[in-house]
Amino acid sequence: MPEAPWTAPAVGAFPRAVSLAHPDGALVSIVADERSMEARAVAVGAEAFGELAGALRRGTEGFRIGLAPTGLELLGPSGSLVRAWPLDFAAWDAEARLGAAERRLGAAGAPESGTAFDQALDAVERAFAERAPREGIHGAGPFALRFAELAEASDFPRNLAGFGPGTTPAGDDFIAGWLLAARLSGREGVTIGDAELGRTTAAGRALLLGARSGCFPAYLLLFAEAFSAAVTARSEPATPARDASTDQAALDAAMDEAFRHGASSGADALLGFLRRLGRDGSVRRRP
Image 1: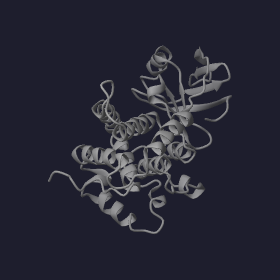
Image 2 (image 1 turned 90 degrees about the horizontal axis):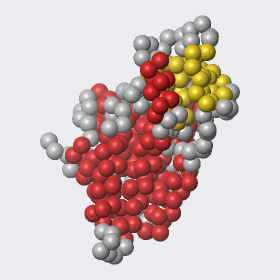
Image 3 (image 1 turned 90 degrees about the vertical axis):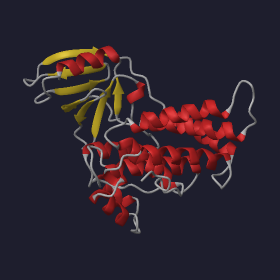
Image 4 (image 1 turned 180 degrees about the vertical axis):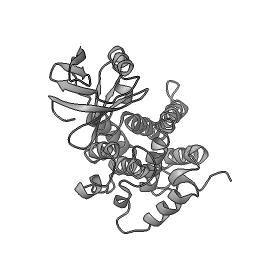
C-alpha cells in the first residue's frame, strides 16, 4: 500500500470495493472488511464503506479520495471536503497467514502421487472441472485458443500478464494462482518485472504487485488455508473430534468464494494454481 498521505481520483464504486487510480499506476481499493482485502486495499468498516459508496452512487467523476495518517477523506469535484472518516489503522498480515499454511503443508509432505497433498489436489481439480466457466480462457473461444498458444511459449506464464478479458485480466489472475501454488509447494514461481507490469491494467498491476511479494487477495488466502487444512486432515488419523470431511467442506466453501470472485477472476486463479502443480484442470469436464 502506498504510504499516506496521498489523494487519487475515484474511478469505480462497486458492491465490495471503491476503486482509486493511484498516481503510481496501480489501483487502490477501499473495502468494508478483511473478507475483501488485498495487497493495495484499506478496510474502513461496514458503516464507513456504506457511506462512501452511497456518496458515489450517482457517479465518481470529479471525486477524489485522500488517505491521511489519521483516516480517509472524500473530496468533491470542487476540491472541497465532503466527508471524513477517522480510522484506526491496523496491519493486515497476509504474510503470516500464508506462512502458517505453507508450514502445515510442508509438514504433511510433498505433492507426490498418492500423498495427502495429491488427494486434496484431486478434490480441487474435480470441483474445478465441474464448475469452471466455459468462456474466457477456459472454453473454446478466441481467448482460450490464444491461451493454449501462449502456454507453449518459453516465457509462459510470464507472457500472460495483461492477457485476456476482465478489469483484472484473466492472465494476471492465472499468474497469481501460479505464484500461490509455487509458494505452497516449494516449486519455482515466475519473475514479474516492470515489463509485465507495464502491459496490464491498473487493476492487474495492483494484483501482480501483491502476488509477487506474497501478498495475495483475501479469497486466495482463504483457499490456501483451507487447502492446507484439507491436506493435513488427510495425512493424520481421523479422530472423533476431527475427520477429513470437515476440512473438505471448508475447502469446498473456499472454492465457492473463489468462483464468486469477479466475473472469472477466481476461476482463472484456480486454473493457475492447478497448472503450476501439474494438473490440467479440464480432464474430467462434462461435455
